[in-house]
Amino acid sequence: MRYISTRGKAPALSFSDVLLTGLAEDGGLYLPETWPSFSLSEWQAMRGLPYPELAARIMRPFVGEDIDPGTLRSLCEKAYTGFDHPAIVPVTQVEDGLFVQELFHGPTLAFKDMAMQLLGQLFEHVLTERNSHVTIVGATSGDTGSAAIEACRGRDRLSVVILHPKDRTSEVQRRQMTTVLEANVTNLAIEGTFDDCQDLVKALFADMPFRKDMHLSAVNSINWARIAAQIPYYVYAALNFGAPEQEVSFAVPTGNFGNILAAWAARKMGLPIRHLCVGSNRNDILTRFLNANDMTMKSVMPSLSPSMDIQVSSNFERLLFELLGRDAEACARIMTSFRATGHMDVPAEAWETARSLFSGLALDDAATEAEIKGLHDRSGYLADPHSAIGIAAGRRFREAGVPMVAMATAHPAKFPDAMVAATGIRPALPVHLADLYSREERYRTVPATADAVKDAVRAAVLSNA
Image 1 (cartoon, one colour):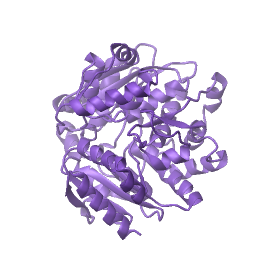
Image 2 (cartoon, helix red, strand yellow):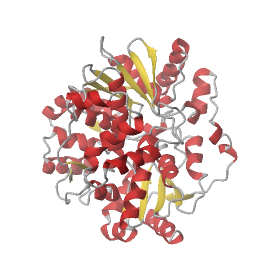
Image 3 (cartoon, one colour):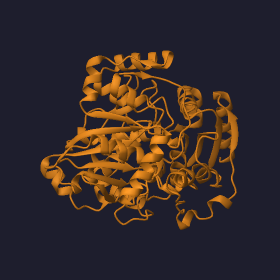
Image 4 (tube, one colour):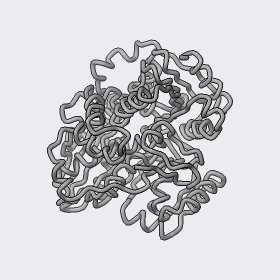
């Protein structure tokens, strides 16, 4: 399996090289050169597999010959050992035809663990084989950072530097990052928004001398391995609802478009997915695009669902590339113009193609709170603000005879203030995080400038040398 950039001017790479590279040298994102697919009998043979074995089977064509099947299966088994539910990704019914798949049973209580725990294993394996060291630099709107840190903490071949927007995550989210005191972990509180953090990470990767000197790699969903590792839970849900003979739809709360892109990728591989529903908060750029072809940046507004407080959805570039018939030149032109003008000019034909599969629903904070309360009153189910938005989108777009599965992306205890306001209930943190509020924190506050972040990264690498 080889991977190509959405902008067409970076070398094609193997899976292991894409894992370690993250962002393509031309500023684009890597995608498989050709999409693997499974036959009807192959899908049927996956039914009933334990989740780690299923994940290894789905990942195998993306990994290619870089990792042998037995090793890949072992890495998947190690990745999901620490999850607190035997099913790893359990599914529960909340309404007629509407189901919830819980992705938050990993160590940091968010769906990011599903991919990040496996990425930690993959990094360790590849770097050991190559006798190499990399510096992971990532941006987080709340959950990616803690999941990346948990997966990489204490690993000798990895230095980890995570940028989060200062005062724009929940306290639980922040403390899950800043209370990890291993020497290979550095947390930076950026005086700006998540989009600023994401832009800074891309700026560091665009500085080729710095990138090579620091041996930079990425764990954000700009890294293709993150997307690939999220595909299996969509397959797991679909197979449990009768796929490949039965169609299924998914609703996903999303800001950076990575989680729902994994569902789209599963569809490209032949999984019978009928419809994909985007749930947005007040930062509704994705919903505006789907409803009116309006991909125009606005100011990022804080919300009850901070992990979705995003206006520049990085992974949309991968979908755009496909919508444009894999025309890398057109994709690069549109993305460059978007960053320069704040408006993305998506051709009408490409937009119509997107609308045939995707729908969007946006909820403001008041509607999100009402959804949390109403869902709990009706079904007893307690959903965090992000998951509640996804469930609302699933309810809006469900169709008779087609199971609708909404992704529950975070444990409600990560957002206690929002849960108390909506339901009067303060969910307890699991035992392994019960003392989180009393743990020592360690982080640096830095301005939203590339030079300041580069200095911090250099310092982190030198201290961990």
